[in-house]
Length: 333
Length: 276
Image (tube, rainbow over all chains, first blue to last red; front, side, top):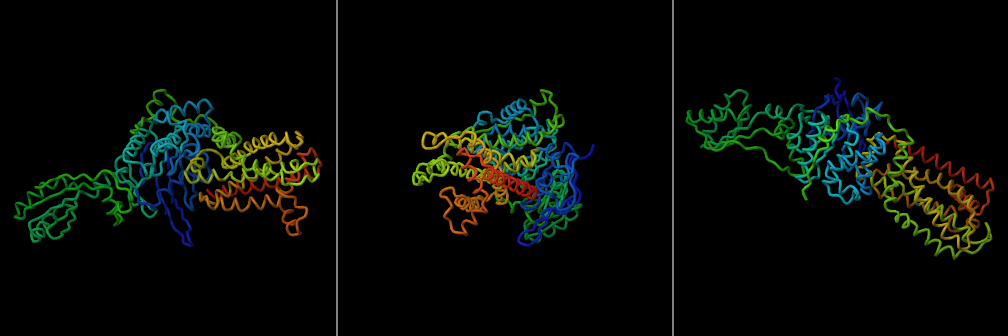
């Protein structure tokens, strides 16, 4: 089966104040039908520009993109018929009533008057919006509006769904609800889902595949688990003295593939499967006469992956604090 | 309040419907798309018919507070009202149509315009549908104004009025399309839209002789008025509302309205293509 999305050297440049900015640089990407892919990167990385090209909102400067078997430049209408889209803004106009907007979108996709009405009621019921659907959209809460956006995007049962920063601006509870909704859509209907996010936890929690984007290029592309395990766990040891730390670092460096840093009485060991190796390391150090007096093990987060790849932390670029924290296993030895 | 999400997925699979609607049917044509866009735009007005009445306040103020100041000139069957009403109806048409883009500016700002651009609706239907929408409230307002003034010194010539409204509808579509383009170019920044709209509307109205005849105007003003298509339209409206179907006046009016419509649609389609 052909991939549902295929881009070749996809590039988009903007000219601002006489300067040319390359928002997306030579993107080569293949997404198979049925994947759930998250584009992760800081603001301005080129995630939304890529999505706008794939949804025919923006013409590529060069390169090509095929979506659902159609070229985005030559056959934009066929592409639009195949995809569902949830943009950064609200799909429903604020002066309209929610149900009217769902019906109008269904009619735009060629559903008959009766089918459109039935489909609208079905979606509004499913998204818990039935009793709010006859009010002006401007009076709905942020979470209700976002659900209406998703309902509108799903009106024609698209095989492919794009969501641009779907959970930005939602409170944690609505964010989790939305994520569950997206996962179920993917799992139960087999819908291909492509979303952009700058929330690490979101990409980690729901995506099968994480495409890390920075400065308009893909810098990593794998499952979240493999991206993180590739980096290894961080084992932080505290020792009785800087002299002990130096000797402990020597021993730790014998672990295969370990990278070791010493700072005063601390030794940081970054190594694959660190949480499994840590007990042995602690025993080894005790036997060598330089026992650890404290230990912490952190599993790698996607932020560590991003930091490792770019030298910058993705968290620094975030304005909203995420809800969960990286897991901290391990205790004092 | 706790909102729980329940996926529509389970119920759709249970009913055994096909996975997608689009594989099985033809795309709607341009006419169906245009109708969809127009009725979508009209829906808030239909849900809130009083909004048409609020928009009536301004023309009624002019009719009540300005028309009595006009001398009965004797042109077009005599009364000042007979001369003034067609101009006021043309004014409401221009005002309404020139605000077509205001809704669009809002929708560019909040995101629903982007959603429509990703839908299968054709680009031209998005433009024409919005431009046509203003015709409906314009007609409703014209009927109300005529109904209000007919008991006074205004002679109703129904045939002429109907032709006159058809000409204004054509003019409205053109102005609506230009207003749409202005909104796209302002890219969601309403102040640009409103500044340009307000700056253009009043000179156009005054140079078309809506409030006072331009007969005694100095040469330069006369020249500026001659270049204003709305002037020819209003002259044609005045003749039509008086039951006078003289071909030269009517022809000039129809031609001006058609030119505005053609210009508006050409500019609008071009703007739309360039924006994406």
